[in-house]
Figure 1 (cartoon, rainbow, N blue to C red):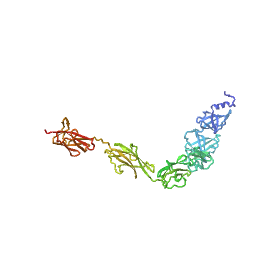
Figure 2: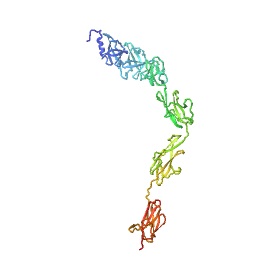
Figure 3: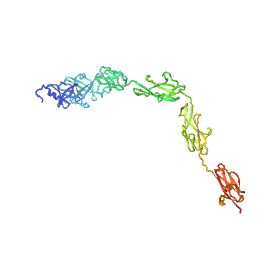
Figure 4: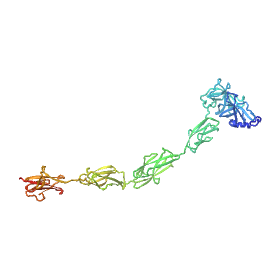
Length: 599
């Protein structure tokens, strides 16, 4: 409960301060105060203020993000509390005093005593009044001092520090704007003698510095009241004296200005790089080289882990002592670039050679890599070629079948699969060609293997040779014998007796026996053998029906191995004519002939 009669007791007021009071500042120092509305002057943004802390006219009160000034004629202490009226200071004026720019808050009234606010100052006579706190900064304002506000220029025509103690009232008139010297954007005016208010960093721009190093910033003019700032202190810091210390790779902006005046400033870009830390690596796909074999060796150069593609290197071939140079007759370098080189083995000195490739980084000669190589020496070629097959039986090929043949080339006893060969078929004399109706080569591929096909239908088996010749070395050959089996021909042999003139034989009977032909008594008939195969000769014999000697008067005359003449001279007996194949006596034919009597 409030005690209205104990006016010296501040506990109740302190409770109000805690409950509904506001945290404000007085001339930059924090205090607790009660801020309430007032209707004393509706043309201004005024508030009532009360606090247990003393304040006076002209004090700057910071409240709710804005500046206010105590304007009460008397800020009295009543009942242990200080009370007064504060007014908003919507304007801040920049005064350039010998290239030191001071920013002073104020409120502005025109001749009709209205508060000037907004973005344009408009008045008929061009006269305004500026109400400042009376302090060390405002006391430096003099007659004819120029300033810029809201893109208009003014000149001080009057200074009144007396009519309202704690405040200074400045009268100002419009002035013409100097496009060359007035800074409308930053609202800085240049009066006589202050037309060159520069503050510059004199170091060569931009600055490049290595991590861990320092560099001093210099300015013009050189003043003790300088401030230096780094946009990223994790990359580079700058001391109060302007000493830059590089901490990490990157880019920062360093800003320099006077501590009393941040309007005149300069910046410089600072690039922090890492100190060179090179590494060199070399790679070769193989290190044992045959004679005249080549290999390409590549290398990678990095600086602080980043590849450097244009980093120059040098290459040297040394013996294993890493001192003695290798002559070109042993090994040579070619196709040289910064990232690769080709090594060719030219070792013709009759023994293996151990050498090293030395790769040196030009920008950092401490970065050296060695790659060892073992060089085979030149050996005169001594080729041989061998034919092989998996066919069974290995040297016989049945008619219509084929045999697979491969070859192996050796050079000094070492298999060499790079050489090409030529295949051919030759006769038993190893010279004459084999007719294609006997055998022919079909190629599985012209390089390694072939098939020999049997086309032999001659009826006679034929022995041939498969010949392989090493291309470029006609004296290097091999032969493989094959027995080319003939096609089996089954012949049915036969002999068939018939009349030589082709006439049909006259069958008959004799004493109850059927006969094949009939001859009239005292007549002759020519007979011919029709043999299979053709042109097979026969022997002719003449007997009686039972195989005995023919009856007297019946005779045979052999013309040749194919024809004969039979004469019938005895009608009392039959005749048996037999033809027997000369080449195969088991092949025979016989006919029975009746001799017909004339009666």
